[in-house]
Image (cartoon, rainbow, N blue to C red):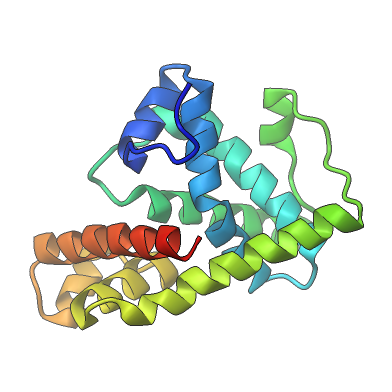
Amino acid sequence: MQPATDPRDDDQLLAAAAAGEAGAFAAFYRRHIAVVLAYLGRRVDSRELAADLAGETFAAALIACARYRPGESPALAWLLGIARNKLRESARRGRVESEARQRLGIPPLAFDDEDLQRVEELAAAGETALDLLAQLPAAQREAVRGHVIEEQGYEHLAAQLGHSEQLVRQHVSRGLRRLRTLIEEKR
């Protein structure tokens, strides 16, 4: 059993989850649920829909974690890409797709007022993470904003910022690591 705050980085957690360690994916989930809820909450008009989409996002991530390739992009960017795709599918179909949850045998979510309050609190914590972005050094802030929030590819972002693609990757990686530290310090 891992401690409440797992010391492993996201790449290690996803590799362990792909190898069948349930606690590793739980740690990955706890580390990123607030940011995913904040990301989705800014794009939909209800807490329930944001929570449903977040559930489907993490279920899809659990199914796909064996296909995640460390170093190609930060795990958070990969996860937000899944969230973006789930949001797009939901908008296109007019409902939240539940295929990933069904494949895992997870029943539909039912929310009471207390659950919705917790979703709101987690989304607010995610908003805090987005606010903390301003505390990063300028190069890291712009790289994280461009790659993770605005979903720009490294090549495009490197050309836009006038840096090498490798340097932009480094800024994103270090910026996300620093954000995680800032978030943990606020807890």
